[in-house]
Image (cartoon, rainbow, N blue to C red; front, side, top):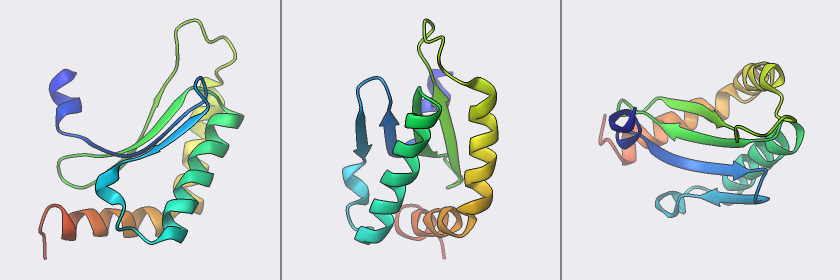
Amino acid sequence: MKEEMEDRVVLCCSNAYEKKFYLNQDFQALPQHIKDELKIMCVLYTEEIGGILSLEYEADGTLEFSVRSQSDDFFFDEIGSVLKIKELQREKRELLESLELFYKVFFLQEQ
């Protein structure tokens, strides 16, 4: 599992436990409205579902949702998490695809 995480690059993360949002400094070049949309999307997710949500790029540039929760968090909604992620993937498809393209062009140097 550790090797798998080393191949990933975190785009952003929202933590319901610490009430914090993090945007990787490597992505400061993104337009402000995209950074705002990411923040809203992730913070609303963690406010509704709980836990920690991060958007992470895999080695091939695919953007994945990664969810973790503390083992003693009995309020974390595991079923709601799966449903909410599917909803976000559907509703934010264009945004997520453009973020993948951005990463592939500017970070992976693909044509």
